Every structure is written in C-alpha cells, then in structure tokens.
Length: 119
Image (cartoon, rainbow, N blue to C red; front, side):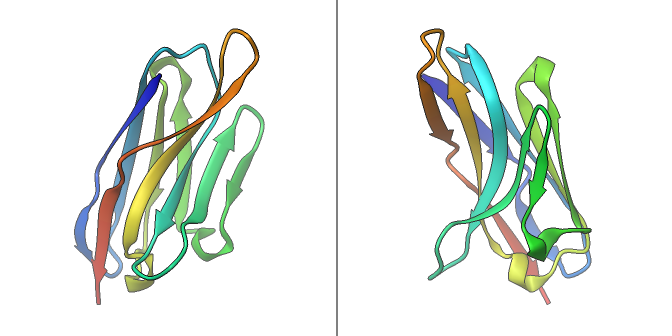
C-alpha cells in the first residue's frame, strides 16, 4: 500500500499564488509518474498536470500559470500555482502511478486539498 498526503491548499484572492505538496510513503517499489487532478463542485475530476521521468503534461487551462515538479529522492510532487483565478477553485487530488516488484501497476490517490480563489 502507498499513502499520499497532500498539503498547501487554502483560501486566496485572484492573482495570488499557492504551492501544493504531496508526499508518497509506504510500500513503494517504483513510482512511474505523479500528478495533480482537480474536481470542482458539480463537475468531473479533471487532469491538471502530470510528471513522469521524461515528460510533463499540463491542462490547457493552467499552462503558463502552474508548474509541476518532483523530488524523486523524497517521493514528493509539487504544484506551484500562480496567477490563480476563481475558476481554479476545486478540491485538488494527488495521484501516483506505481509498479510493484512483480510488474503490477497500481494507481493511488490522496485525500484531496481544497483550493478556493475569491474574486
């Protein structure tokens, strides 16, 4: 089992910045990739950004404003969010795509952290 613990959410004003962190712990053999997703009230969960060993991917809505990074030694992923907009308001979830020593892949999710941007 792998546990993901997020931190860094909060209430900010439009134009402000926030930095989310997500630390993975537990029985980790290999983390293939980590990412952030978000879910606003009444909407489906959507991808924000993902990072693997060779590729970074962003949703069009956050390109140029958000930056994802990863500390492999600490199994931690970060999301720097600048120029926040009210439409960024959502619960942000951390995701880890992992592999076991036997080659099986497992997907894990954090509990979510609330980001609220006021206008």
